Length: 443
Ligand code: URA
Image (cartoon, rainbow, N blue to C red; front, side, top):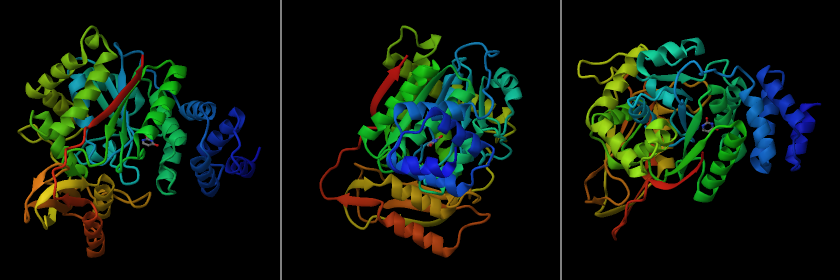
C-alpha cells in the first residue's frame, strides 16, 4: 500500500477500505507519512466525504491508536460530554461541577482551541497553577478526591487524533463531518466513559453552519456510539452569536464563575441546563424524572452554591489557585484596549459569532498557527446581543489584550476591522434567537 494511491483514490471519490484506513492511521501515529501527504488526504476527505463505514473504521482505528482508559474501577455510570466547538462556549466549567455535585463521576478529556473556536483546556490553563496533564493512572484518585477530573488529551490517548487535530487546524480541514465525528468519537471511546452527551453547535461561529449538517453530524456520532455500545445524546445549540457575553480565556472563566455563583445570563444557563439534564438522564439520578424536573434540580445546584463549591474542589484538586472568595486566581488580567459604541438607535439584528471569534483570535485569545502561545487575558466583552434595543452612543463591545505580551497595533486594527462586520442594527424590533435547536438521542 502507498499513501499517494490512497490520496488519489479519495481525490477521485473512491471508498477507502478498512485496511487502507488502518494503514493511514498507523502511518500518522508512527509519523512515517509526511505532513504534506496527510494534509492532502485530509483535504480529499473534506471534499469527497466518507461513508458511514469508512467513518466508523477511521474512528475505531484512531481510538485504538493509543491506549483505551479503563474506568471500570470507578463505581457508577461515567458520563462524558464534548462540544463541536463554538465562540464564547463556557459550558464545561459550569456543567461538570453541576453533574458531579449529584455524586456522578465525571472524567472529562478536553482539547485545545481549534480554528476560531476556544478550547476548554486553554480556558482552565488561564487559572494559575491548574494542571491539565493528568496521567490515566491518577484518574481514580482524582475522582475519589473530588468526583471530577479535567484532563488534556494525554500523549497516549488517541494519539492519531491529536496529530490530525493540530494539522487540520492549520490546513483548513476542520469542517468535515466524517473528520469531526471520528475525531470526537475516537477520543470519547478511548476516554472510557459509559455514555456521551454532545453539544453540536450550529451557525456562523460553529463548524456546522446549518441545522441539516448538524443533524447529519449527530446521526453519524449516534451511529458510531451504537457500534461501540455507548449511549449518545446530541444537543444542537445555536452559534449564530457567541454564547454569553465574554469571549477569550480568562474572560470566559469569569463569566462561568458568575453563572456558578447563581447569577449569569439565561442563554448560557439554557445550554448548560439542557446538557446537564441529558447527562443526568443517562444515570440513576435521572430515572423517572422529566426534563423540566431535572433542569430544576440542576438549577438548584447553581442557586445553593453546591456547583460553585464543586468547581473550587476541582481547581484545588488539579493544583489551581483560588482567592479567599472562592474565585480563581488567573495567570494574567484582561487589559482594556478600546470600547466601541453604537452609531445609531435601533435593535441588534446581527452579532456574528464567526466575526467575534476571529477578532478575539487576532487579539491573541486563539492560535493563528499551530505553535502560537495564547494570550490568556485577550478577548472581547459584548454589551449587546441579538434582539437588544440600543441607543446611539451605547456601549457595544470592549476589546482586551493581556498585560504580558499583547499583540501589536496592526493585529488590534485588524480585530477592530473584523468587529465592524460583527454587528448590525435594524430599525424594527428583532426577536432573540433560541439557544436550543433540537435534541436527538440513542440510549
Ligand atoms: N472537536 C474535536 O474534538 N474534534 C473536531 O474535529 C472538532 C471539534
